[in-house]
Length: 415
Image (cartoon, rainbow, N blue to C red; front, side, top):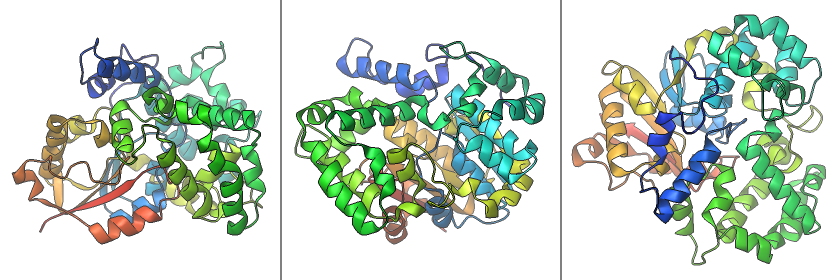
């Protein structure tokens, strides 16, 4: 297992830096990339924002499959374990995500019960979580991860104390959502009221009368016209340009309005924990709706029993695959990482994917815009090995409850 530098920041994290920086430092593009990298060097995603139900159906994930995925907040990796794959290799360039993924795995392996897991990871601010950590988790963590969670945050608190509050209000994304709530309140809208709706009709009414008008406000339009304003969503400069291509305006307000309309109106609130995090800044209580897939009781035993099948690596996707044997991977989950990549990086990645892919391999990924980012960019030899499943990609993309991506893409190896 590759070790984790627990206090590595952006300057010390060479792997993250090399993935982000593509322009000269003194160019406008270079300065934008470096500012994003500075923000991205901390914890970004306490919760992953890709729908695991869509992922598992797209991959037809089944027992025995060998999976490689990007970690992010770790939720989907745990959900995949409920399908009993043979192995899951989890990669991430952000050391904070590495520590979070390793902690979540340990929680499932060592907490006494499902109720204890939900109490610790559910974000309900249980004061006893620190004691539970010290009793059940801390002695069993690898030393770098133990040092990380025992270390101090910027306010001098042990990092693990965040589980005694609400970890989902932290990280770059959690703070960005909090900023969105503040801006809405400035304009007289309390987004938390969305949690009180009782039907999809009321969801639609709330969106049309209270959320949609915010995107016509001068402050919102000014903010969404600037690349840096969306860094809190984890959207790098390259993705901003992709999103801007969807609108005739310089502001991304119309695009973001459309994405929030899907999040607010296309799925029953009780079934969409992404909407609960966006609007209520918490998960639903039992009487209100369903928890994320990995926290649901029916998945607990399988995840606990299969937790040892997941291995967390502080490495890039391409780097990990380079060390694997030919034909040794069945399923690949790239999230939206390719939106960041140049042609050279994409071809290097797909060269390793093609070499390590089994005969029925499947690759899934998301994009900020609707179009697949690899079309027309892969070398002819590599492109000939893969075929996009257009019908299934488009159908499942519409069902992605997180609603923040423009495109969902499934590629199958050509027989």
